[in-house]
Length: 310
Length: 304
Image (cartoon, rainbow over all chains, first blue to last red):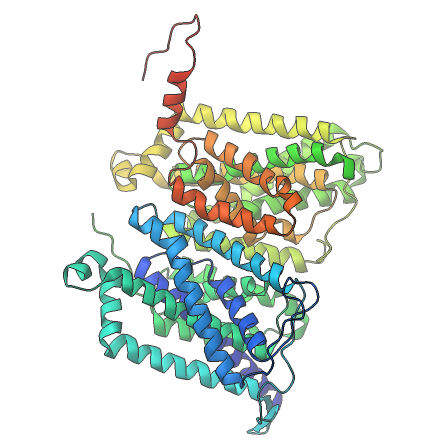
């Protein structure tokens, strides 16, 4: 039974990352109705920020070769700072890839392209600065915490527990903020109808920027956590996660926060339950779910069906 | 091969233009499908498997016989079209961003299958695909012929019932349906045509590239091909062709600036839609240009 417990645990911790990542997509989608394809690049950036803030050295291939912080920060400070850095980048992204199109009231399809262009720029800047090689985060990044823990008879890696705890915390905070605070309510109003929100005295543009900031923070945080838990396989490593999170997003229902979390956990568990001899097909699990879901119930698990008025 | 660069680039450009048209066709009926790279990969695997695994086609000969290539084009295009026909019905019920995401999922599922199926050669793919032409010029001729055919089809469509129906569905699906247009059928036909074009492009590409692997049909390719259409303009067939030619050439032309080239490429995709939301070529601009042309002896055609 140990083994099953271990598998479940692995699945849940991977699922928590998918959920965190998909939340960032879902926030932007619920407000703008578009998918931010640069989200995966911001996730990657978060992992690299975390690596650098923990005191990791840049390899020999990048322009920044040899650069290193004099002293690594504690992992939780590094994670939060990386998240904040990504929030800034994400706001910048909004200013170049989404804002100009929105002000011209151009077709939403175009921002798929511009955000992807921005993602290409980000990923390649990372490659130029840091080189194409993979990075493993410095050993002992977790400070005093032991590397593995004994939980109910199963040995689990501490980072996986951290991952789940952080995701749960972020989810609770995010839900509270969205449902209980003035800012969250204002964001929901903008998502419902930007023009009416503006008439009611809500600064729509500022809310959209805030939304990108939160989304970027979530991407940076999840990137940093994945970097800590696995390793950074190169500047392109966010793209695969970005696509899977897209599957999670649709499975949960576009724009639904609890849906994204539920779907993230389901996909994580399903992937972990794929038997070893079929492991090559693991990457298709999220997309198979997505595809099936779109055909059976396009609004997703917890999404609202869209009624088009004529 | 190093000296062949200047000749292989035009071939890639023409293949890019074909893929642009493949994304354009569903879009002409208002459907954003990103499935093109999936069908492209299917066409390529078809060619790679047939030419290396079926001796009767003449894969052992010094040059691969042209009739065999023709047969592959028919089979590769046909298989892509058939798959599109089968999945098109359920998938095309989805609209807008949902359709786009479903087609991205389709491409990813196909990629994972291609990576893991026992006969597709795994991550390395299939090697030593026989060559029907001894130099890039032959490929350029073949690809240009395919492109000319595809362009002719798109031009013909504009005056055909199907093309008119596409435009009607694109402008207002509900209105089109209430006028008695079988919108599901129009969308499905556009989707199948798009798949066939992507399939035959894959067949030719596999021979041209000499190897074929799962990387050929990836999410990146979905977006790159969509960029061809958005950059060139999605309202005339000329737009995607121009977009495909230019954006395929761009990374190669930027090669001298080294690592920065992909940054510049990203910037072009980022800034292009902001400066030209309609793409470079729009029907209005075409009309203006046509009026600028010097009047020749023949009388001007009446405006429709």
